[in-house]
Length: 215
Image (cartoon, rainbow, N blue to C red; front, top):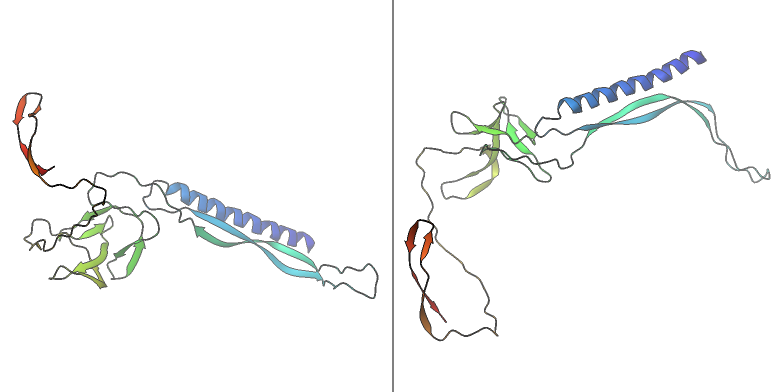
């Protein structure tokens, strides 16, 4: 019985090591996958047999400090497989629809059944209806804009880029400038015309201009 228990205990270690190899192999296989997060295996020991109970320190017996229980572990087990969500490298892309997340967060996409999924893979493209989709065709979700050019934060909807379609632009209504004049600055009390030099670039002379300002 002791030999069978030893073999079964060793077998749990081999099984856990096999899981580790599987996880490492998956990490290597996805080393070039955009947005992939490597995983680590967490082990936990198994205590299932107690051969003897422990005892507390005794004041009646001089020098007795108590004993620990005699427990025999039955091997190891995989407690969990945890992905590493630390920030990865951001690569430069020539595709204008590719995006990357710096820090925490996920892109929210919608599959064919309408379920919301989360990904950090920012390789996106346009479909036939000018919607932003993933490489597998899942639509990217975000906040929409109403007719008054206000962002609607109460509901997610597929992001659409209306290329080639007519859209009404909202003109700029207000411009605010802020600043501070130091009390020790020079007070401008007269104006003058400043004549600039002739502007040219190698072969062609662009021309001369004047700047009207305050002295």
